[in-house]
Length: 398
Image 1 (cartoon, rainbow, N blue to C red):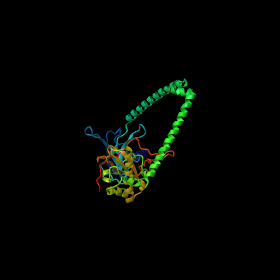
Image 2 (image 1 turned 60 degrees about the horizontal axis):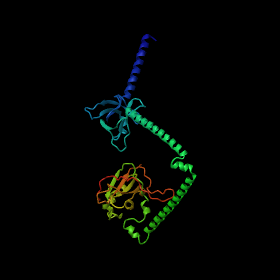
Image 3 (image 1 turned 120 degrees about the vertical axis):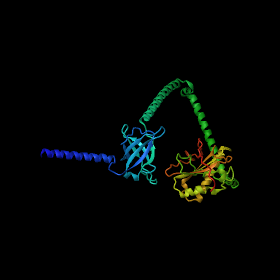
Image 4 (image 1 turned 90 degrees about the vertical axis):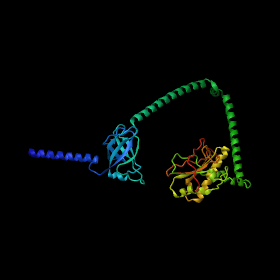
């Protein structure tokens, strides 16, 4: 091959490599494909540079076109992105942009989450929501604080161990009450006998309480006393706990209905409904909507006996549940109750209290039942901390 031919082949190969490189780089930068622009705003871009990757679902789908500084303090930094048209079907109005790092100390890139199917499409030039980036300096500071706390805990443990050694030495030598118990067998025997006697007394007392509860339950069903309880809207204490949960879930409701107890019940100390139609709006929502479960929360004012108010609110929640289940078609296992007794913010109608229907979305975990029998002994416990009822405005009757 002549020298001119070799030179020509070299030039052609070089041009081919150059053109291929241009297309590869251009493809990555979306220079030869149809794109659209989106924006996101951050307080700090944490080292993100123009030309950086934009990933949707972990896949390279665009580039950072430019980063615009704010015009004055207090405003945010605007990141402009060029995205491929193929992402237009999965990026929606509720998509969120975040600044991520490749590995622990790698380059920053912009990640965009998938949107929801029911949300609208984004348009060219739209600004989507963003999440502040995690800065390495803050992470290192938190790590340093954790290490300091761990070191302090180790020092406290060392001191506690030293104290235990000192106490053990005193016990071994017979000092103090514990030392006397360990070294004096007669004193230990006397104490053990006293403990057994106290245990027998407690068992007898518990048996007496159980018998008393059974007698009271029998009285509730007595022909002469049944009307007394019916006037208050309930007659069987077992029914109060049948659908009651021990607490509200840590989740946001999708709908709430709030009523004044004075609006629903005939007397301040009664669970007998007088204005059932006020509940129809809540019942229709339950019958016509998709939801995970709902809780009827009843509370009383700060007046009156604490235990009586607790039973009264449990009965009110149960009565409201029975009305909704009987008059509206939905899965009654999705409707729970919770009587919380006295609440300082339970309403302004002279201590009557409130009734709420709190409706939670699908997927919300249902708390356990409030009255669970433990170790074969029927017991009724109440939460030590008061349940906080949502402070929504009272709804007027429909």
